[in-house]
Structures are given as C-alpha cells and as structure tokens.
Image 1 (cartoon, rainbow, N blue to C red):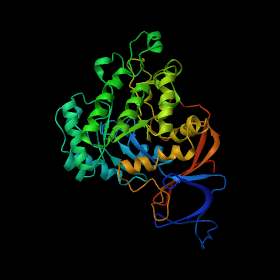
Image 2 (cartoon, helix red, strand yellow; image 1 turned 180 degrees about the vertical axis):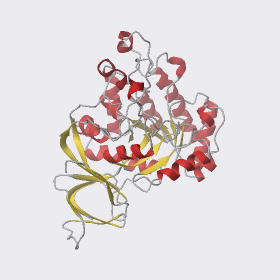
Image 3 (cartoon, rainbow, N blue to C red; image 1 turned 90 degrees about the vertical axis):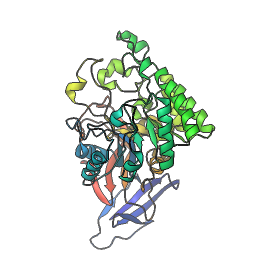
Image 4 (cartoon, rainbow, N blue to C red; image 1 turned 120 degrees about the vertical axis):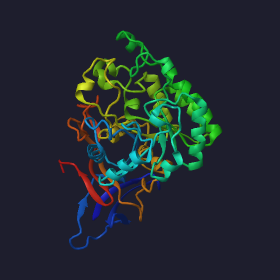
Length: 423
C-alpha cells in the first residue's frame, strides 16, 4: 500500500512535511517523495490530508467483563478505530476485577482477535478495596501494562507508597484516581454555583487537590512513574508542576471534556455532563490548557466511560458519572486547543501518541521507517457533526457540536480498520 501526497505529522521526530508512505508486511517501509506504485499495489490519494502515528488512549473503560450492555471489547474497538486510535489501555474496574491472572488472561486472549491493540491495566488492590495488594509481579509477567484502581481512590497512604515502590521495581506506571470521598456529598458535579442552583453540595476541588498533593510527594519519594488521572483542578496542575520540578516521575492526563467544558455544561446537558472528577470552573479549564501548553500535562486521555441511555436518564444525583470520548477526542483537541492557538498540531499529537507510548513502553506512537504501520489519516480542517456512534453507548454532551478534524482512515498493522463512509 502507498499513501500518496500526505502531510506527515510525527511528533517523535518533529516531522511535518508532505510525502508518500509505503506500507508492507504491517510496517512502514519507505517514506519519501514520489514513490511509484508497483502493479496491483493499493494507493490512497491523501492530498489535503494529514497522517500521524495511530492515536493511543491510556484510559478507557470497555466494560468487559461484567457490564457489556454498556460496551464490550469489540464495540469499544470499533469506536476507537473511528476516532483514530490504534492502541488503548483498559482500566481494571470490571466485574470481576482485573486482580488475578485468569481474569487478565481472559481479557487479553479475547482482545487479541480485535483489529486495534488492546492493553490491560491490572488492579493495585484486590477487589479495589485498597487493603490487600495484588501480585503485581505475576500480573506484570502475564501481560499487565500498568496498575490502577481507577474509579476508586487509594486512601491509605502507606499502602499506596508500598504499591508505588513495587511499580518502580517493575518499571511500570501506577495511575491514580484522585478524589477523597470525605470531602464529597454528591459526586460528578463541581461544588459551586451550579451545584447550589441544583440544590446539592457536589464535589469540591479540594477532594482532588488533597490527594494530588499527597501522591506527588509519594511519587517523589518512591521514584515510581505515577499518573495523575483526568486532572480537573487548576491547583492540581500547579502541584504537579511543582513536584515535576523537584524531580518526581509524574505524568498527568487531561481529558477533552475537562479542557473544553466547564460546570455550566451541567445546566445545559444534565447527566451527559456528569463525570468524576467533575467539570469545574473556567479558571480551572484555562489552567489545564496552560498545563498542556507547558508540558506539565503530558497525556490526553478520554476516560471513555460508556453508560446506557436508561442509566443516564435517571436524576442528576442517581445517574452514573462518565461520558464516551473515543470518537470525538482528536476533533476536540483540534477544535479546543489547536485552532485557538493553545497548542500546535504536533504538540497535540505528542500527547496522544509518543508520550503515552513511551510511558507504557509500547512499540507504537511513531511514524518512521521500520515502525508499525499504525496510522491515523485525517483532515484537520473539515468541519463535521457527531451524531451516530460505533460505541454501544451514546452518552456524550458533544453530540450535535460543530467540530473540526475528521478522521478519514485508521490503519493498524498496515490494515485499514476504519474508512470514513463519505470517502
């Protein structure tokens, strides 16, 4: 296969140039101008389009096993491919929890038949109770790419410190959901004017900031690669920035919803704008954008969290938190960050490709000769409106928005796994 006349955007080499790309045997085997096609070689004319390494999402919930009425490995893979993602890392809060080798092995075995690359994080604690540590070494040897109790904070500092030290020994990241429930009365909505208008207390930002401060110190002491997941508070960004400067191996995720929306979205979209941690103030949103711009926040992840329509139609306090995000992530990055001038396209892609690959030691995230032919080809200027989803769920506040940046093709292992129906 040859991709002709494409603008190659590879943040790993700071490449941004028009070129042709030849793919053979699942690899990029040639990048140069004017590659002549061999007889019967497939040619994609990508004039006006941009090619980048396949996107990598470090934080998704495919709900499999246990909650497959919301999503499963197959539908999650379809949604990922439509969004330009060729690699994803699934969280461990399934049912049963990914806290043992049999559960991990089952997921990885079934995932191997999907067309994207699915990696699985294992739990830090058994049954996500924060009391008994999992056998991290054996889980790592069985294929776990990292550890997290995402969805539930690890409240015992001593327990977490020991888990961090174990992760440092294994050279695998540990990812943390930072919300201290002792501060929270109604999760999913920021404590402030919006929650007051709804007659509820909500979740104040100190619930996140207090654990971020503690865990950044533990990260500095342990030496582990620690990921602050879905950061939502401007003060949390400042804390991460400070401890990074002190030498901690810290990483921070920002989601498209946290750098695009504020708590006011709850008044417009109701439960579709309810998530943990919640959307916060415009000041917080701007601090997250500043953190992305200066590198304090080095990863963009969706926290793709499918729920059924029936669940999201419950009351604001009864509905579960979370939104889907795989199919709109790149477009929101372009619309909210690149077009306003906060990030360059290469800076955006760096946080969605090479940075996640390097953190998780994945052989992905690069578009160079000899690398895997995992690519997303997109039109950064095309305006489109998300209406239908390949995800099994549709819980998104961005349905009906005018977004820029349309994925036209996604390739994984040299195979076209998604093609825009309008091509």
